[in-house]
Image (cartoon, rainbow, N blue to C red; front, side, top):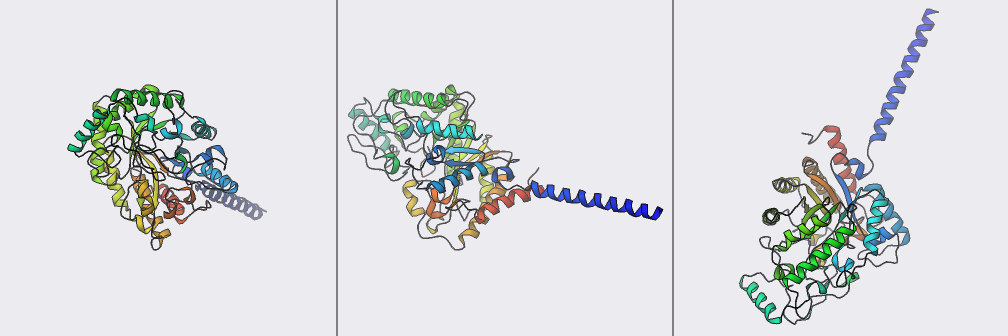
Length: 446
């Protein structure tokens, strides 16, 4: 009888152990993250750029790079909600779309409002792109009462100092049509933005343009105060050579101090918003050095700047060492780092640079895909995210520039983690694996 009792007791203990181990195994399996936002929740927010199809749920609205069927759009929206916890507008807060006509009555808020509402409804961290840029700005911003003689004198002075870029207008000259998304001139030509090239006739005076800038920033930031948490205040002010300011009408009419002015105006409109300077090609030292000067100029002027936006339009040749060096150098500014427009081009035509000139995009995504594109992209994405995790104390936000390859501005370069039908690519698995292994093995947890 005693032996039977002992056997029963051992059986009960064995069942307890089996159940305990089984529960632990089930718990471990259930804790393995399946989404980007969950995998990286201990490191930084994971965001995505969305277009007006996603924010409205409609396929009958015009949006660049977004020819989607209703069925595809449903999948796009579901993917955004499933994988990401932050968003940025691809276009709908840019001046040419939200403020196409002069003055306080010239705003068109419909799609900007839809973007912000989408973020609020889905508990997303909402970022705003962009208040000032040299592209996608309506002509009227730069038209005014300056005489032709004053314009000619200014242009001649700029030419003496070698500051006039191809986009600089000549007095009385007619503007040219832009390319789709062209990041060149003051206007923005093709696609959904119409044929608005350079302004014609007299330009605005410094005082006129400063007031328009102030009114625009106050109105846009003020409308979304407390809702949009981060603003790209100034976008791409560094010239393509990397060592000078881009010669734009902002610089030509106001001067380089337009940048700290813009940050001051944005802070006045929403003192709690995170204000960010955003640029591309910061993987190169010359552009990072110019960025440091811009940040210093902003701070010396007593204007607030709270974060650095590095676009990170990279290619499959990108290595851990390159990104580690970039992030280490950016950390010397003492500001949070936001990766703002992440994608990775695997076209043969785009393996030499990290630029973001949309006018050059056709060449950058030409020539077919590189050999073993999926594997090379997956490795490069893994190296990038290893570097980002290493610098997790400085990196607050990582945003992919598009939901899937089909809606990317570089769709011919297959640059994102999801293909045109929203299926996960090898790069998605590689990025997820980095986060899971980092957590399991305490990588970069110092």
